[in-house]
Amino acid sequence: MIYLTEPLNTSHNKAKFNCGQKLLDTYIHQQAKQDVKRHLAACFVFADERNEVKGYFTLSSASIDQELIPENIKNKLPNSYTNIPVTLLGRLAVDKSIKGKGVGEKLLLDALKRCLDASSTIGSLAVVVDPIDENAKKFYLKYGFIYLPDTAKMFLAMKTIAEIFS
Ligand SMILES: CC(C)(COP(=O)(O)OP(=O)(O)OC[C@H]1O[C@@H](n2cnc3c(N)ncnc32)[C@H](O)[C@@H]1OP(=O)(O)O)[C@@H](O)C(=O)NCCC(=O)NCCS
Image 1 (cartoon, rainbow, N blue to C red):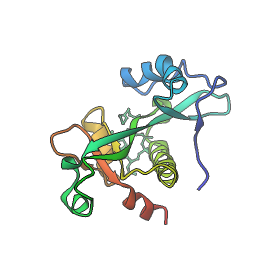
Image 2 (cartoon, rainbow, N blue to C red; image 1 turned 135 degrees about the vertical axis):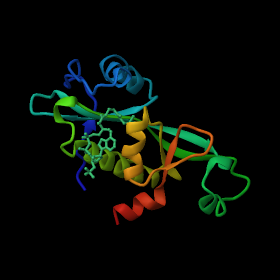
Image 3 (cartoon, protein in one colour; image 1 turned 90 degrees about the horizontal axis):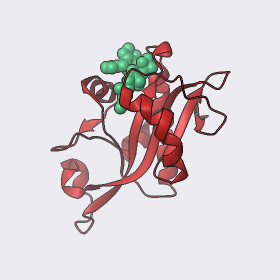
């Protein structure tokens, strides 16, 4: 699979990006570049022929308490691993002008493939997302993410992601 996105760089125009969620718009306008510079997040963008950003997502290292992990996966983990390494898909957004045309799905697959590829270099049991609202939850549910109990997070095992791309 060839990646749809590329790492955010200074040639990308992000000022007009508008997904309808102020937090996600402000993030790409004002904060993403700084987070990348500080190695807090990797930011990948989908841009048009004029280099206008039309979609983006961010990835970071994260960990979750073993207690939160679904029983069928937890059973196979050593008890001594209290914090389990995962990859956080922190944000994912598509510009309003191209919503409903399949770009969100393509961005999600692009993000999952990047997570899978990276997991052969740095271990990660799953991809975790922090859905911004009920609609975002429905979007992720559609792709097999499951709720993690007592958190606002959702989870997709790397094993499942590997099967998607096998
Ligand atoms: C959620 C979002 C990324 C979807 O992008 P998109 O390009 O419009 O989505 P797609 O056209 O690729 O749709 C893919 C599938 O998800 C479904 N879908 C899209 N948005 C959805 C939503 N808000 N709720 C439920 N399902 C949704 C579509 O119906 C489609 O399924 P189908 O093929 O069975 O019809 C986009 O609407 C967005 O940026 N929203 C604001 C930010 C946001 O909520 N981000 C999510 C994570 S924080």
